[in-house]
Amino acid sequence: MNNISTHFIIDDKSTKIQEVKTAISKNKDKSMHVRYMAIYHHLQGKLNVEIADMFKLCKHTVGTYIKKYKTQGLDALTPAPKSGAPRMLTSEQEKHLVEVVTSHTPDEVGFPSRKNWNVSLINHWVYNHFKIKYSPSGMLKLLHRLNLSYTRPTYVLAKADSQKQEAFALEFEVLKKAY
Image 1 (cartoon, one colour):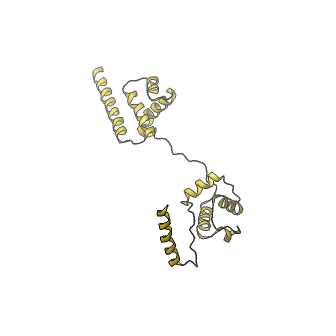
Image 2 (cartoon, rainbow, N blue to C red):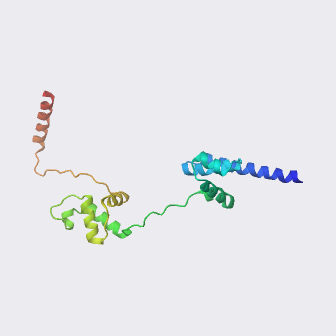
Image 3 (cartoon, rainbow, N blue to C red):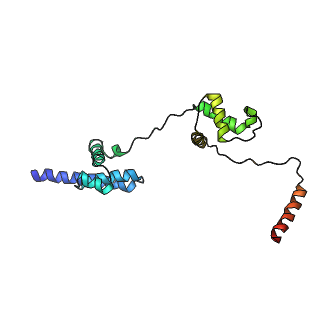
């Protein structure tokens, strides 16, 4: 009778090993790979200390992975999503910021003799309207998250003569080749 219960334990162990191998082969995340490999080696009979040395982890971390696996299965090894810091502007304020920056020039919204937006001006505008202060790098991250990027404006001269411009371009090419 004892021989039969040993057989079930071996089958159960090989099923668990196969389950971990499948998870390893489907995985693309490095941190999850390490977690799965720790479980795999544990199921192979390695000690927590040996596993910790193999993957340069703390033995307590390995123990935590194994405990989660034993109580809740492989899905418990997935880390919880990181929430990050809360947003300083509400979604309505962000929409208003995008609308102002994309549809108005700085001199239209209270920055005299300024035609182009930059991080400093946007920072001042946000502080003046919402009383929220950002660091320059924080404002850059916010603008990036809002899909706004800086492009240097190009000017078109209203009174430009296209024939004179073409003649100059040809003359300039001749001068470049001469030197």
